[in-house]
Length: 88
Length: 416
Image (cartoon, rainbow over all chains, first blue to last red; front, side):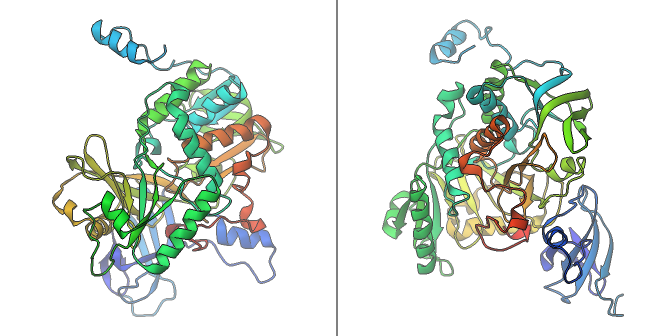
């Protein structure tokens, strides 16, 4: 598996670390405990299309949003979490 | 049919014409007392103990593919009970005791081989941590021996003791640990359940649950609707997908763990050996192949194959502790899909839906738990209360604060 980093180009898997599901969002401060538990612990864990966070630690250091298929490992889209304007 | 030495001899002399299929292939009935979803090791052992221990036999095991086609046939066959936390260790020790009696119990040769497991340590602090773990094991009724270098050299003279980066100082030895012929575990439990009247139905995929007003009354399958008073899901690897059909989200991600087998070699590795400074574990099968593995790949996946960086990492781990294996050739590699839970520990629990039960989240440690998982799940299903050794495996432990995090790394499944 190679991930096409928007800043560095296609790079091998071992340059990246995986964080997990990018679709969960942090609740508002003061939200009920159930929402926090859902955010921190519960996952849809789909078989197929998955949006996830990776970080290019051994490269540019950027946090990335990667759309990847969890069955075929095909990557369809990679974007910076916070666009820098430097993407190729 | 009962297996015995005499039977083997008799069949050998008479052309092996008297062997029978080991289980029936019944058509599904329209209703059962209990439906077990998933015909893997855990599902089959649940059915077996429900019948043998609790006398319940109006049971069906529904399997999407063929029996044992999932992780029970894709693991590295290691059994051990070397955990530390109170929520875990008594459960895994129950499992070890069940392994020890298993073959006599279900009259099937599962090749349970207690050849021992040694976790290597490489520094003084790690030795102290292992001494603590060993004491926790002994307090739960398990066995543990802290080996110093001389003791370890006697068993494993081939280790690279003076490795410059990770010198080997000794190991924590559990003599009762070992390996088991994994497919035979599924077959033995299936046969034992079938003899007692459990219907094992293969090629029957559950496509939905019959849920009304918060009560589950059965399942929809590719072979029709089947009603049941209790529905027990046991599909590790696919837990998220199956429970989504009941509208549930789980504290689980699916990850792939790779395993490897070398060409057959003469006997060289006495038991199971694990690296304490990286992630590598190895044993030698009775056919001579070195069976080994390491870390999970570390990203969500349902593919039963992994990527090359982990292959390299695992082989580096092996070379770091036993360079003698460097010239062995790799014969096979494969991957199994794991339920990685958010604290690295499993679930055996009711759900918020009445009549629907869940067993899963076994991470990469489900095989060794097969007997106790089935025993405790059967206890929960039969008595509607958890077995005393499995009271902590609750789905609500992330909101109650009762996490069982052996590694202490928090809610990051790829680090467990």
